[in-house]
Length: 162
Ligand SMILES: [Zn+2]
Image (tube, protein in one colour):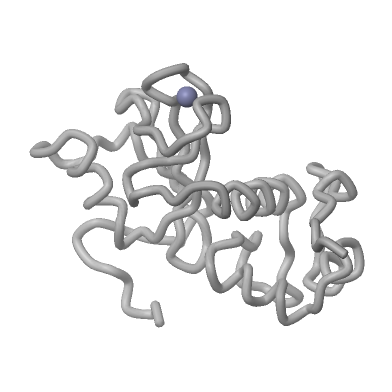
């Protein structure tokens, strides 16, 4: 029996608790907690933790693709090119997520397909430099979601991070 997560059962416009996800996908709740630890975003720090359906879908797709090819930090998996590709710098956005993570999104430099992945804020500056270089990352490429998430993600990693 192959273990395949049916992302189709997840509704993008719904929020799920860990127990909901566990039940809907038929995975252990510890598995879901582990996904959160490795980058599945949660809505905020309040209990119970809520996971947005759209975020979960992205995470599941990313998991599946990650088994097909490994990306460098500054690359994302383009499912049209079927290989790790660099994003067009102008299209690149980092969207702040809880738990020190960022949703990296950008268009494939080859075919323009939108690519997504989750990265740690710690890596954002390096990713930026790997892609083009010298200049500091521009404000317009950063979107902070929620208020008091991160004041300045780049000068220092916030101290409450594990
Ligand atoms: Zn592509």
